[in-house]
Length: 258
Image (tube, rainbow, N blue to C red; front, side):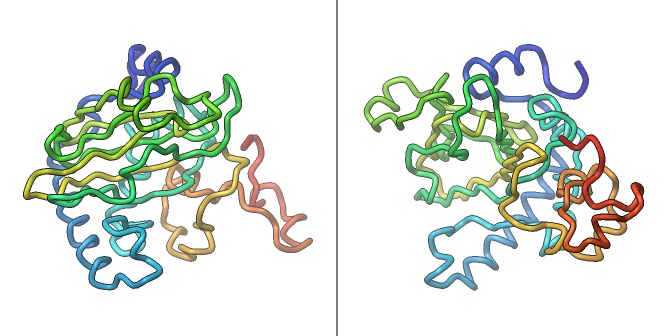
């Protein structure tokens, strides 16, 4: 097996729905991402309005405001997780910040899943949480309900908390999970915001939350093949017959993309 995923990680994700991948990101790099994230969260909160208030402490697509965050999407450890569970043609469905405010909680404080589909024995979406701070019980470590990813009905809160387990990644660790696993964001009882980033990845034939090729535009001309792949540049749909009949090397939907 290549990359940071161990056999134990793989078994835990496939049977329990989640696992912590240790020492995946250099802590110094994760700290730099944290500092940059703090600035974006502050800016988003300043600009918040009635429509965006539901996503307080969440920033969608942080790479659009700070290109450094493209590094997250093509980080070898992160991509190895996507490849391991969804294959090497998988793409990013959504990329957001996952911050837990001091002395509070946010949108994640509910029993929920990050994927609406249940296909027995088949994972359509993978979640990857990149811890930019140590997760503790005091600062809102996330709860997961083991083995719940094939449930059709959501558990009640009493059922959930009777069996849920908390994850405690340290800065630079990843929490990898089947996005259908029921989870719950904790309560941050400390005086300091707890920060993380979350990627939701999906199969190459699925729709993304945002049309990244159209959103990013010409900037992608300098992107690496890996970054272009995860952002969906290899699975674009032709918008004209001319695009449909482009030579193979120029086609928008590349061959063997799933």
